[in-house]
Image (cartoon, rainbow, N blue to C red):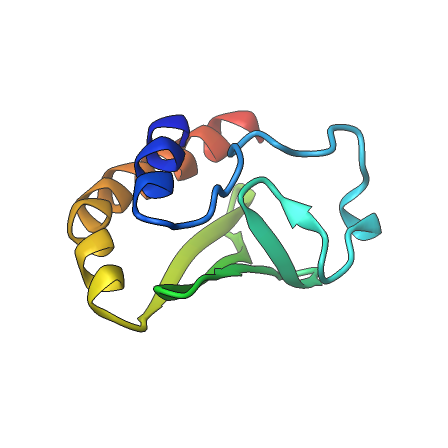
Length: 119
């Protein structure tokens, strides 16, 4: 994110901050729409889904983290689905997404694996 923010500032895009800008110790039910979660703003927080996003002059991003409880004969677990929707506004947004799209295809599975290890 530091590299992204440095490069983005050269073309007039906003600094998103850091991924780890979280309030550790804050209970998930205390988060309200409009609160910052790392680089995103909380849109909605329900027991089964967290919606986050960010808006800029070049694109709008919405991220959903959806939790589906699962059961089998011998265990109870959860299926976590991560969905990102990007609405590109202009040529700068399209140019920005060229290198970002392949990175997201690497980052999203890595984040989900880290979450799976932590629960």
